[in-house]
Amino acid sequence: MPDVSINLDGRKALVTGGASGIGAATAKFLCDLGAEVAVADIDADKARASLAETGAKHGVGGDVSDAGDADRMVSEAAAALGGLDMVLNSAGIGDDLVPVHVQDPERWQRVVDVNLRGTYLVCRAAGAIMVKQRSGSIVNVSSIVGLGAFPGRSAYGVAKAGVIHLTKTLACEWGPVGVRVNCIAPAYTRTPMVRSLLERKVFDPGVIERRTPLGRFAEPEEMARAAAFLLSDWASYVTGAVVPVDGGWSVYAAAGDVDKGTPLDA
Image 1 (cartoon, helix red, strand yellow):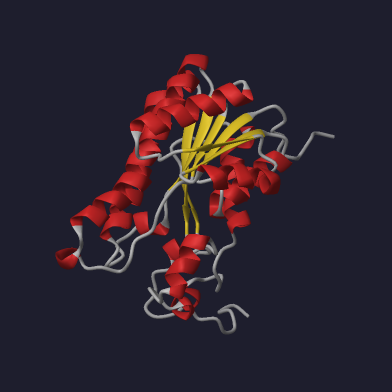
Image 2 (tube, rainbow, N blue to C red):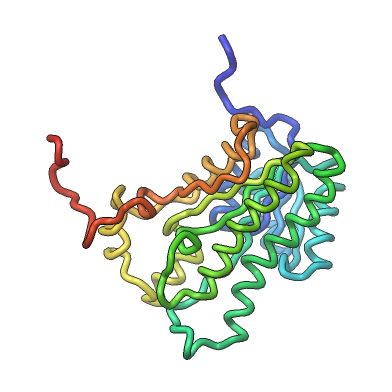
């Protein structure tokens, strides 16, 4: 009988934003599947502290939006693990609901720098390794906010839409040498970032739940499973894909809330 499980034994993985949220959940899941993992985070102490929780082997601190830091974190992870086969780009920061005409340009730029420039810089550094070895898999984290317009969230939306375009471009550039690049687009997930938005009442959770066909927020572990699939050989012929992991958010186009009553064909 064929092995029907995802096996990542011996694979070397770097997870950015790996100290919390989707990054931490994915780091732990990759370890559970047999990978050797390094986590990177802007807070070096948190990166190292996360090792006990995730099972990762190495923690490194740095700012993904800084080219020197990005190069150093990738090279340090590869040295500590003895190679680099997989990368999850999960490092990111959120924004508030602010109309463009009253937005602080510096805050806008910081959100774009961390979410888009940071993803680009880590992909660039990891790609230098993977292209040379003619193998590797990268998964970038975009968002449903990158799939369509969200009024008041121009910084995050622009950044996450850029991540999608970057993913497709790299898939085309690096596919011929066996490096795959894919992307997940999460909906609202119960991460520290989203909890902060809820605490500051940036949005009403009830509105989100009523608008989502599956009727709830996502859990970080659900994003981890999608990312692990795309990183693994189970997705060996998948590259340039943008996978919405959103409970049906991106396909719902009717007016008003999702009807949570009796199904139409019942």
